[in-house]
Image (cartoon, rainbow, N blue to C red):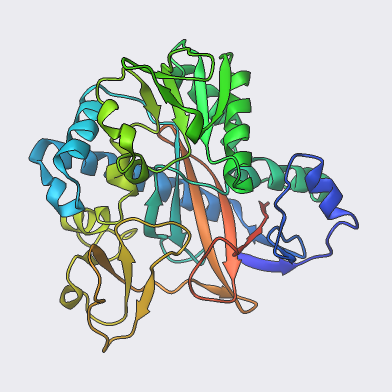
Length: 366
């Protein structure tokens, strides 16, 4: 794995906009960068794919243990949320996708930092934008990226033969683009679809409905479960008959308190880091993380002498510093579609914490 400086396409903004990528620049600074790319060999990609598959399998086993042993208190989940997660797990409600954030230098085993299993973004740029970049700039090289094809195939199971509604906060460009892209893959899988802003989802007294008063049988929602359960309509979810994508059991994996449970059940696994709800259990530098949060929100890096963060619902994980290439801290997002590793997207930043403004940089391998 190496970072290679390259010359961007002369009209790269126009080129990425032509495939529907409108948020390539944030507050005047490039979010998408192609003055560099990350280069791998095939053996490194094979190791990443294998590690992602093994981590995902461990995560599914962890969900099963939580549900069967009732370990919901460890995740800060109340009875209502627990019953939703439990029912969706025992009903075998299928999941669509997720993204594991990993610290990886291409040599040592990848280390799981967290699993964005409910509402992961950076999908469109990982699946589509970097693929078009590869075809334009390095047509003889390859890319670890079968995300698009796997999404279409997965929708054939997840869609269930029903119209699929898609709901998101469409005033957020990233959320809107991600949701519209997933809607398009669902169409390519042969389903009828309907897009809604999350605020346009209604309740008839018996079912969730769209603006045409049609019942919502399948709902993809780019809206975290913890937010949904705080809404006034939360009491209707269990009796609505709606199947959600992602299903409620995914809230167990998107919660960072899953990390201590993984360490408890799979201690010293090469792809895991020591993690606990207690700072004193983690020797040396650590990272304090909130149970719930997105894009680096609430994360603090603690040196070896710093104690616990004074805040509720915090996880402590041994520090696995992101590798630094050309002064940039590099995070690998490894995508899972269904139960299969599907590709990677790379984010980088001058800071040690990856945030929503951290740049996306394409990759290739030979």
